[in-house]
Image 1 (cartoon, one colour):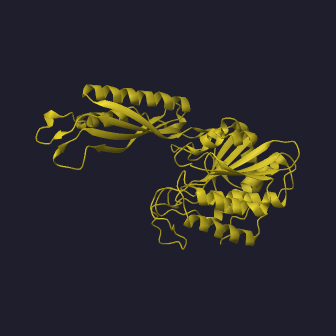
Image 2 (tube, helix red, strand yellow):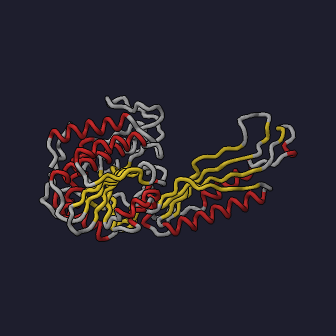
Image 3 (cartoon, rainbow, N blue to C red):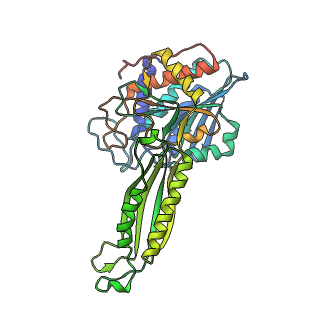
Length: 397
């Protein structure tokens, strides 16, 4: 179980992480900090450099049994924090933990403390600190890393805090939890000209004007992501030419985020968007090229993993339901479910809590004992060992 002293130390650790955020692919110091925090727990081994800066702590019972992975994220966001209510603000300009990954890491370390004090009876527990969650590249890189083959989890679980839900309430369900998505960058190439003689060039302006509403029309949001046909196209950025009054533009970029309820559907929507952009470009005499960014697989809860998580929550008195899920937002956890029975849980910090990715967001430390208790009960239920879970939702530090 976690003592009051543990909770104070974990809270201080979380706030220290909050001060030193690192964005996707740059989590060098965060990974080192996690490794140093893990060492006193004496895991069987610590694997570093997974898929970039990923860290995995393995607690092996030495007895045959399944391998159960619990995941947290290392990375922060390229967002300037604006929060005058906390004494532990980001010290890195333009970067902040306004998605709560500092809290998720701390919950995983709390689980490690409990497992180290009372080992599981069989199998292995893996604490997976994943890099680059925010851009959708981290989980794929971790799973593709040769070192991950040695870990080969049978089960995988993750908790993400989800503002808007009541404090301590967990939203989860069987099936889709988070949509598949990708960022499609469309680049149109024409020819610049003097603004006085635009006929001497090939401007992409009218093509962009036609392309934006046409891309938007590819979406079909009726019924939300519970509808298998759900598709959403969001234009997030557009740029035409140079900021000058003397040059008729010759190039343009359009950024579109595509979302669907399944991985196969995202491929179909991407093809439709590419075909549309190609047709429009040809109509206006433009060249066109594409880039893919922030590609997230759909996160889908396995029925057995969901049942395990529900039993654990009911055993320790955590309220749960299907409210607010599945979500349109994407999460880089789905890849872990490709070869393991996986479940994502969304833990509420309160209906009025600042939203994720907002500059005034901060992870509520009182969620640490709740999330870690859920994780520990799952581990004990699957791997045995005396149940040390103790839910202390009222603890305030």
